[in-house]
Length: 215
Image (cartoon, rainbow, N blue to C red):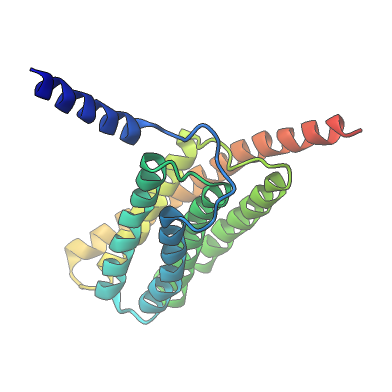
């Protein structure tokens, strides 16, 4: 009976550690496994961009799949091992933004999507990157993720993956999928900008509050 209780207690401790969303306080630590994974994910982005721009779509999809897996892995490890860091909270959204803008840029270089879509997405991401940097000056981490932002990012990533996939073959069914992927991309861009407005309102509100507190 005591063995069963000990086993159950051990399982509960593991479950508690992996279900914990964040450590109590993000720490000023840099050399951690999650941060290394985030850096490697950022390093994979130029590889994906180069492969897509050269229409080497199968290896591009493989690298993109590995990068997507590590996106969840670094957060799980950070929470489970109490390695949530301030720099890690910045690296993760930066990696997501870079992956989207570089993938979209590569699709433009490959002649798969129009350049107006690239400009619209890039303008939003540049502004959000500046906002994150400004907030970091006052020790603010990334803004809480809004479901609109999640939906926009999801739609864009689905569109990017589908467009890469469609470039591998040519047949009527793939052409139909290409149109659906472009439609998803347009919806994703719209949601992306709606989320950008929400984040901007929250971030600027915090910056104004900080400015007034120092007057």
